[in-house]
Image (tube, rainbow, N blue to C red; front, top):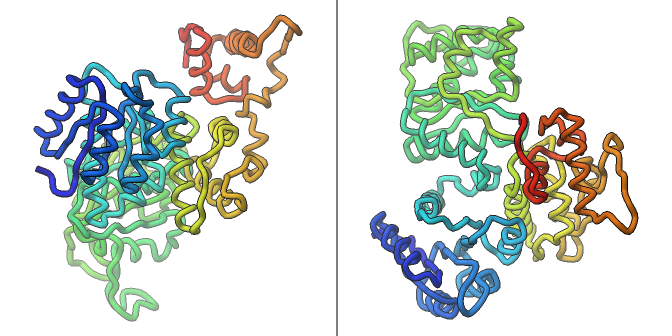
Length: 458
């Protein structure tokens, strides 16, 4: 049985709950079952749990309603709500009550088992002091298809210790966080993680900073020094902003191919066992065409590319991260903060986040610092968030509004505007979203709500 990790499954469908419990036990995870809200509270009084898997609908109560009571008994437990349907209101309600996450119930219990196993890995990482909290804080957490795909790819490459990973994505999406996560799950415990900002490497010292130098090898080298590759040992070297690397590209290519390097001023080959991860917000293929990046180095780095999606394409992850940052900074500053109000969550969900997760983190941090009432009020959000064209209250004039007073409802008007935008955009959804001033994800969600066909180009 797993030491220090126990799960409570709360579901009135006894066969479904039993199936989950049996599979968890087969996976070496301790598990108890409860078939009502009352039983769940009694179990929480009697035992200690790390995860409570809670059905939304229970025979004696709404599962979401009892979340605060469960957390009152066990403040450190992670609550995952199971819902029959994936809806924003259910997600908002669960998170505002204190749930960590939610998952849609399916005939197959495999996604639920995998989710619990993921929680178990987090628990082990926290217990080992491995920095999982930083991983969550940085924005890799989430349930959107894009971020789940990223995590799955990181897990796959973790099985190949010498393969170089190339992380791409806009500024602020969490490339370094992804690199640290890969380091945590694939390198020896306690091994170094060495990050190098290639954009700030001084041209004349770049080789020394990366590979080290011997005493007297150049003016000012008054003692021998190990470089980043040597300092990393069996850990990880992150080459951030690799697209801005200068003349040392050829040396780096040789090191990656030979798995060894020489200090400046030495002919001795030093083998290296670290994993190399490169990261960039640039299009390296374009840099190759421009002649500013070596094609052979690009091919060597691009063995396992992983694209990290921008926050605006991650849907409900925005709300999950916003609540996480709220809790984190409230705790850090010693403030008691209420859950986010619905008007605040709507504005946060509507904003386009050009600075991605880093920007969301900064927005919440500033708001928590400014808060005086224990609530994160709408007025505490930056002006750019309140006036962002992604807000449905700020639709651009490129879409005419033929409103018929006394006849049209807001829903009917929105549907007509979406149809008109799709017609103007030649049924290209990304262009229609731009005309409407919303993200493609938001457009798809609204099309679902209005029963509109999704045929056409993305």
